[in-house]
Image (tube, rainbow, N blue to C red; front, side, top):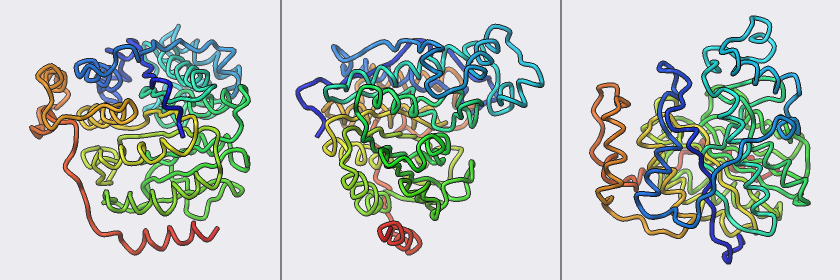
Length: 371
């Protein structure tokens, strides 16, 4: 059980305010800054907030290559990359553009994840919504991810003597970078629930990563009832069987119905349900963010995740100050002229999105249970 005597910690930074991958990119939208503003408006951050440090280049080299870290720094300094760097390190592409904070921003989220590991050394709960960049590879940017903070977090835990870690990922996209780092490592159990047929097209049901990886691709329309079945039939038993000293949960919000980059249909109740269930399975819990490209659904989901971790009650209707945070997103043009449902301004809790548990999910859970 996560240590209840220590107050949960929220790690954030002002670097995310106004930072964007570009006006055409899915990560043009504000996410972490909006979660911070919502939590402050609700009175949920006082005495619990820590400013993220920026990881030093040498710390990033715990997993990333020196050549890549140097290329990332050079890209920020110059604002451009050569064709050779683009080919070698995946920088300056459509998915992974060069932008003003292309080194400082990911180095800050990496610093938060490494700080989170240090803060739970003796037990506790830490939330860093800027984290979850699970596609980053040792020597290249990949899938909007320049560094891999979940990997750096787990390696930091290991350096501190916390060796048995369960990594759970409920992002719509498979955690290819994290699996690359820990496949075949019996000290880490990896469970990933992601949309089938979705980039990066890894994480097949039969992919066991050498025995320690449990990949569950799910079909479009994946609903809250099905997530509970997956929680009870896969996530909880596999995590419990590992007897972890720490759990790292990647809580990507792109599996929500409103997200433009997936075809899944979860409500944010599903995310909070996973958080609450995992809270009691290890003395240390670190929750990171991940994907999510609708600014309202991301902010509401991740603020609700923090409420769950911090033991705060979510009201049926947001107070005026919190509602103003969400309405300001439309005022800044993030709706792109499209209508936004009123509930996305006035509430944090989605209406439940229940449905049948389809046979294909039951069969896949049975196959994973038999391993």
